[in-house]
Image 1: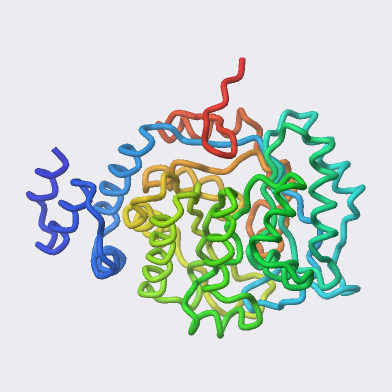
Image 2: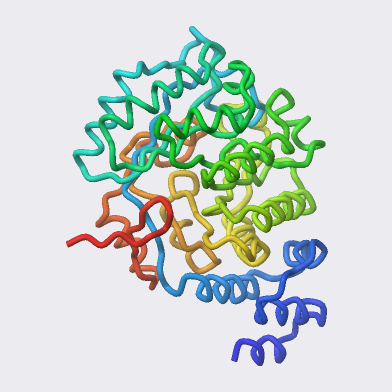
Length: 371
């Protein structure tokens, strides 16, 4: 039926051929992915992305009961797009002690969270000994929770500071209790763009190598892409293709999360944020192109609850979780919701209103059954 609908439409023959490949679950080339970005209208993208979504996940929309902990925003880098990082002693900076982190973990586990997400700035004085001790202390008070911690940029710095190879570093963290790593720090892999927006940060090749090393150590991860700034569609497709190639090799990416550039309080504030239409276009193309990723996540504290709900019809099948009012990365960049938290009932209401089925998951996308 979908094939007939598309063949009877007025779209170009090239787009019809691409649509036919999507319906047959055949891999798209970079040029075909680029054409979807540049030429496909939003209605076609919605049809194709939702088709792929339902093939992979049916009507299920996943969420998790989690807490985000940000130990510090003190950072050796000053990325031009970042509204979050500060230098030590600068107004707005913070450093949580391990004791303060443990207090947050205990309070959250008492509420039934299953995942502890820990990311922050690249602190100049902290190495792998400090962070492995942190993970070990968290594990003591949350023995059954999944610990997802440290972006590739944080890991690159702590490994180098400690004189450890990627494999050695991951084995230390894994022994301490690390279960997986998040996808932050990827931004856009293309070096021309990175030189303009985050020239001191670990490069795209380094990000990919660190995630590859994590996978080889049996540590799964997520992947991200920062979009809506100075990049072009060709840079997005190049980024997605590099992720698709690594997933072909290792198979241990759990989910892909497009992250929208927000323009408040940073060095790129003169740029206008992209529209909701562009958000939906991007979610759809990512879902269609990343054929070997099981899940596409809309991070609701970043794009807001209303856009998240719309995204569920453009290929998205995961909306993250309860968050527990604990992340400041996007509130400092000017998002409307300055206190991001949703209850399970809130999440259910959002998902059901979009005609999808709520499914509480664990960190590896096993459905959690609760009475």
